[in-house]
Image (cartoon, rainbow, N blue to C red; front, side):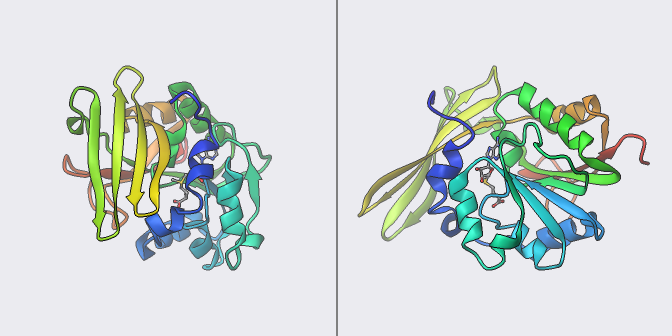
Length: 245
Ligand SMILES: C[S@@+](CC[C@H](N)C(=O)[O-])C[C@H]1O[C@@H](n2cnc3c(N)ncnc32)[C@H](O)[C@@H]1O
């Protein structure tokens, strides 16, 4: 997928995003509220505000960054969406001059940074924008390479009476990148939603954090704070400044 940049995912999926992914759970919002500790929160890749809006409804002061005007337009159209400050740009380098008590990036969005260099830059930028006792929360999948055969995978996501959703993916094991097309087939035709991700193992994320002067404070396998095990499909990792014990 050569013609893919920071805007591609959001601009292509914005119209369908909320219908596809629905609301976030109470546990997600409660944990983020707790970590913000009454201070300021920043969401990297705020999108349509699926997480930021319920958090703001609990009186947390939330700011967002996003690259996609189409996603932010969806946020703006929702009740309260016009009151959330959003900076347009890439969160690889946070383009702001402000420090936060909580910076968070959920729903695998950190992996949208498609090189290791950008991911390290993001950790460094987060460290530079975090208050001394602030938290950086990352929610990403645990890579599962068993799903690829011959460096490819095709998966059924949803089968309905009126259509089908599939995921067709190609794996570049050297660069830890997965390029995929989320395919929606219905009576109206075929729609394609491209996604390009660079995955990292939990240990690689911890190393990036260390390079940025951050250290792992908590790691769970779910928003319900279950332990991360070999069967966990995702993890929620919370980092803080290394000196802050
Ligand atoms: C999967 S959506 C998640 C949106 C929201 N956080 C949620 O959970 O619903 C990823 C979002 O990150 C944005 N995004 C992807 N790469 C980005 C980048 N490099 N800089 C800023 N935003 C980016 C996309 O435009 C999209 O809105």
